[in-house]
Each structure stands twice: as structure tokens, then as C-alpha cells.
Length: 277
Image 1 (tube, rainbow, N blue to C red):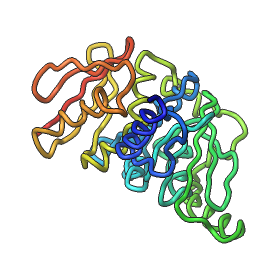
Image 2: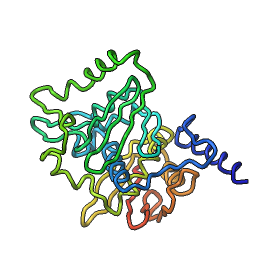
Image 3: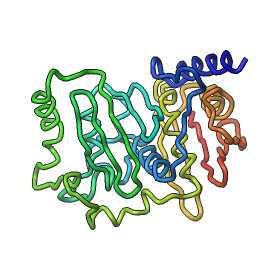
């Protein structure tokens, strides 16, 4: 029966993606958005989070691992109507590592165009100006009153103003320094794939204990998602999650090249998946 099938699928998705009580009630959960702007923002966010200290994203601040360490704080990544929702142990800290500032030596750090809409004792609401994409960070802890919340938020973001830095997220519009990074949020053939991978990132970090790195391609090299594998079964587990499980990416295809590498395709977009033993 459809209802029984949807309930089973919801339960399996909750297990695979750590959704817990957030799983949809009374129907099959929707994992992926359809809005182009939201997809473009999530694709950029995916690239920023799929970085490490050894392989930092170009928008990472120098000599730090602000965005590369965000995955350590995450509990749930899920699609909600009109926005992406990320549940975390420390919403204000994650926000401080995503919001853009102008570094005195490096230039823009953080996600260009990301702005604070508002925050409450438990939730931080963000919007990406160029794409219209929205992100809510939901804390596992609720602060007792807005006075405490404002104090903690200020403590978490004060470093954006150290040594003459400029917190770009306090500007009303997009700055010239941010606009030059327009290629970061441009909608491309790989945008739906990167967005879909973001939604399915939690098992890669937690269940499989991997630290994947996204390496953007160019004219002579395709996009790549690379990780150091712990065993010769890790690659199969990742491919199974993305293409065969209940959490699979609809329409995604995997073409094996070697035992530990292949090409993941979605529409006209693709990326190499590479396990390094």
C-alpha cells in the first residue's frame, strides 16, 4: 500500500540521513529543492563544506580551517519548503564561519553575498543575495533570553572585525569585492549534482567516517570528489548510498572506471568519485 511504502521509506531515510524526528509525516520526504537559486546556493555551500585543512576552499581564510571544520558541528542537513535547514551543536559559530568578511591580506573569506536575516534564541536565518537561497541554522541548545543570545552571537562574530577586517555581511547589498566571485554561485550543469550531494553529506562524514574534498574541474579536468578510504568497501558504500539506497539521487548514474574510481552523472553534469587507499 502507498501509505505503508511511504512510511517505510521515511524510516529508512531517517536512518540513512540522520533525520530522526524531522522525517516527513504522512508522505514520502522531499530531499531536494527545485528552485534554481536555492540549488545554486546549496551547490556553493557544498563546495565550501567539502574542504579540509590540507585542501582548503579558495574562500577559506588563510592559516585557519573555519569552513573546513563546520562538518564537526553538524547533526542534520535537510530540505524544508523554501529553505535549507541545518541542525547543529552551535548555530552562531557555524554562522560566523559562513558569513563573509574582508580579510586584510586574503580578500573575501566566507560565502560572498551571504547575509544575516535575523536570529532567535535557537535559530539563525541567512539569505544569499545573488541567488535568493535561504539557510536556517538550528541550534540543539536554546539560549535563555535574547539578551544572552545577542551576547553569544556577538562573541562568535567579533573576530570578523579584528585587525581592521570588514564584516561584509552587515552591508545591505552586494559589494564589489563579493561580485568578483560571481562564478562561485553561477548555475552550471553540475549545480543539481552538487546540491544533491550536500543533502547526502552526513553519512559520508559520520557513518563512513570520511573527509571528502571537492576539487573543481577546468577545461582539461573534470570535477572530482576525493576521499582517503579506510577499507576497500568504502567506495562501494558511497556509490550505493548515492545511486541505489532510498536516499539515492533521483536520476543519478554511476559509471565505474576502476575498482576505486568512476563517474557520477546527473543530467548533463558529472563528477569523478575517487577513493584513495
